[in-house]
Amino acid sequence: MASQIAKVLLSLDAEAVGSLKEGVNFKKSTEDGKCYIIFKSNNDFKACKNQCKHQGGLFIKDIEDLDGMTVKCTKHNWKLNVSTMKYVNPPDSFLQDELEVSMLDDGGLQLVELSPVDPWMADPREPLELQKGEVKVHSWKAEFIKNERKKLLNYKATLVKSLQPRIYCPFAGYFVEAHPSDRYIKDSNIKNSAEDLNALINKLAPAIKTWTPQPGAVLDLGLALRDPTNREAITNPPASAKIYKDSWEFDLYVNELKSAIKSDIFKHQNWIQFYYTWAGFQNYNLIVRVIETDDKFECITDGYDYLVDFLDLSFPTKRPNREHSYLEIKNRIGVMRYVVLHGCLWDDLYIGFQNRISRDPDIYHHKYRHFI
Ligand code: FES
Image (cartoon, rainbow, N blue to C red; front, side):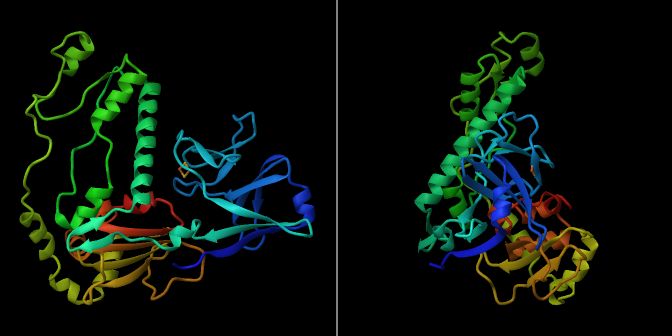
């Protein structure tokens, strides 16, 4: 297991510590201009980076919060209670990563970042390969996903309740990661079902009608709005309705993806420059490392591995020294090259089962994903 590294991000001398007021304090490092939040309560301190977990926005004081414990993101109004480090909007959702507050003998203090935050993160514990095709999901990961799904279910039901629609039906398709190479995702990415969500909404807000889109189920919207008591308006699927297929025809799709791999353009390294220049995404302080892999996300000898600097659309051989967001994406070679060849959406490269991503900082790059 790799060891945990401690890095001092901000130091305050005794005088600066003495001037911290009870409640929320915003502090900026004079060295690198980065911003931090320190919460003081009875000489006890909590601290975090001033960086929203959603998309990295900056927090300011939440003037609606009379208790003085909450800050509000300037981007999309998420709210964080810094006395608990829990986000209160969205409710019951995320925890902010805390910095260690280390008190010094001379009365000063330091904000220290431990990396990784939890020692067990030092060992990323990739899925254990048991036998060919058999993958075990670690119990800590399964537990984490289960809890996150539960929170999401509650969040959605509460949201629907607050919006008070007359009829609600979950908007999502039914899909399953059926290909054997996606087995790990299938086993670990347990999804909330539309029925569970509707059942919770029925419990929390019985006046809201719900409908689950399943084969053979009917929602006659006109009728349901005109006469909600009419039993014809919303019907359930027949008992024999099948949600998922029994067997799958993969070759058609997989062969098409694979056909892109040998395309002539990939014989010439300058396709990289040509492609990203064509795409035109730039003026965004993000470095992306793209690694082409096999189906198991292992590097392959004839796959490309390159960096793109989206600030000025250059292609450095190593990460620049300036502060930047960093994304490392391992993409299956067929998918990567198919997207390039056909000018497809980057959505295809940034979606769960087709890649493995690590982000520093761990924020979602909405602009990047939705550019093309
Ligand atoms: S709410 Fe903070 S970045 Fe979106």
